[in-house]
Image 1 (cartoon, rainbow over the protein chains, first blue to last red):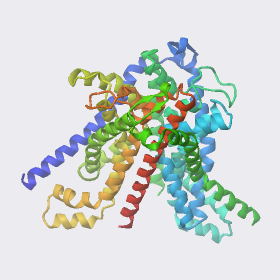
Image 2: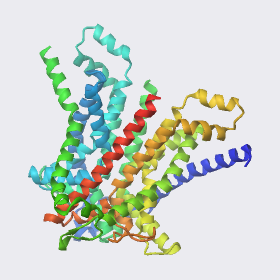
Image 3: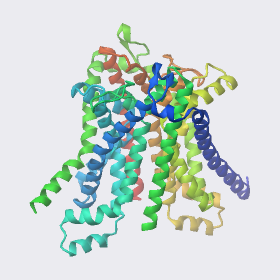
Image 4: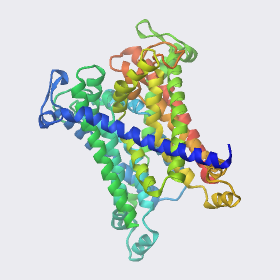
Length: 275
Length: 282
């Protein structure tokens, strides 16, 4: 093949790869929405499931998803942002920071089924939380922690150094500098991490089914078992209870994921403009 | 000033949350799983091909081979596609298209794995059965679904490393009369090699660890597969399915399977970070 031909072939192939990936994504989204949107209505969203989810709605699973996500965020965000602040503002690169980074990176690679096994034996059994919002939320918090740490750290590092020095020059203590200069400047990036964490919590199944259970009742406390939308979708689909209700739930999941991504891109757009 | 010191110590404590989580996970997975491996014997546990919990026989060879099949398949489909997409967005695509493709590829990462699983089950599995034969649910179906799921990992990390190749490398090659493709293939890709390798290792980790999507498309038959059209069980799909009802030694055997999975993942994690350290040093 001459150099010119191979250039042309390579360019064509790369276009084919790029466009077919996009096509795949659109197919996936449209397929789920095409099967699921006709099922959706207010009744489906706001009423309780009947006969295992064969009919009725998915209200308790929406509540369950929201509750688990909230617990996960409330725990993971202070821990993750705190880690990022410590790494960027309170220490230099050292064996200690390398160790912390190793922990964060490795935790990010741990598969969700392992989190599920751990959450089950640790939170559910050892700490006697049984299948509950608390056990599931804590497990999810550990899962999304690395995401929050990484995005926060990146956002904090992007805050210009002059601002920090100006703050010190005005007599601010380190913590005052962090709260008045660094955190406000890094806010869009930090929120991006939080929203990514929300997205991951909403879609997670393997870890949640082992720690929060699959009870279809409405939760009454943090120690109530719940079924999330993703788990409901899985059970409906796998046990062949109702394809229709499954696709309806799937469409709600996909719409939630799309919303999350729209918010993230809007936030990233804001960050770029600010710099 | 006392307040400042308290805050410093609090932050230090918080900074250990991820490492502490990892340590706790390691401790409890091993505590639950290791005794059974000792009881059965490591060799018989890993190379035993009979998994009959009711008879107390625990060998995970067929699941290890199942995981190998779907993961290898996912890499065979996913790596060339992902690296080509990365080359497309960094080198060939017009800037406006690059700006659009990036967030869309990341959107793939946000779609829940159960959705991949069920779309795979309703679209891909019947397609395989009809056009390629076999029962439908198969290692091939698992590999194809996983290939799509690992695309975001491969594309984004390969993209970053291709972007990090200094401009002078390209300019030098082009000035010598190389075509754009010759420059990419002979200069840019080799220079970005360790980043691309990192993306492959991380993608592999994701593929081995994925559970729900795999459960739904591989069929979960407990036999050593000889063809990609055969149904397989993977390490993860067996844990995911049987944890629903397992007790006693059976449950411990699932944790022991988790130990094996965890060791594989940690080995991959460590080689990925060693690989990316090498690329940043250069």
